[in-house]
Amino acid sequence: MRNSFSMPFRYINSEEEGYVGGFEGAAIHGMLRAMESDFQAWVKGFVPNAAGGAADDMAAATVEPLERSFLAMDPAVALGVARMIFLGDQRPALDAVPAQCTIVGVRHDFAAPPVVAEYMERRMTKACTDVAVEIVESVGHFPQLVAPTRVVGILDGVLLRLHHKGLSIGHDGTEEGEMTVPVTTEVEIDGSIDVTM
Image (cartoon, rainbow, N blue to C red; front, side):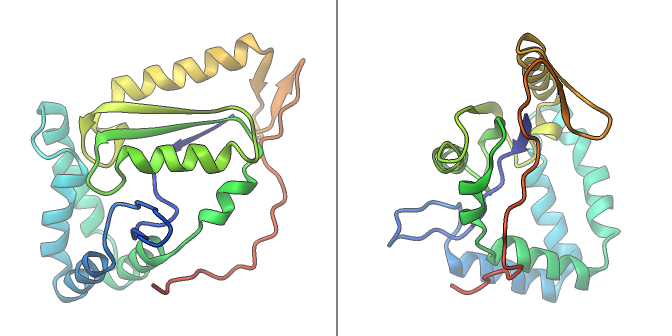
């Protein structure tokens, strides 16, 4: 059983494909330029939104530590990672996920709206039969930060379903028990990241 916090495998919308990733290409390129020109200012704008802003006391309490974490990154490395994340297109990998999955998203996520989790579910059901989507009723991009109690409840439910199926997770990450469900599989990927629009 895998769990995924909803993160688009492509952030840029594609009108031709009817795909919603959360952003138009120009917005992504503008964000990357902002990161490059003033990383600290970009962090101060991005993190409060990603952490749910001041939606509640819990979200507000996460902003400062998350900002410190982002600001501790080397700006050049952060920009390279951001380019890979926001310009990449890894959607074909969704067709090769063989394990049962639970995708967790946030209802009011500016970066990965619930439609992204629904898209992931549709693509992943081609490879495996048991994909669930859980949408947390909150604001922000990180469900584990904006609604930790709800995420713990979701994870408890996943573990309970595994228990009822007679499965347990071993220390090496493999599933053990009466049933065997693959946790990982060999997927041939060419190693390239398509960052073109």
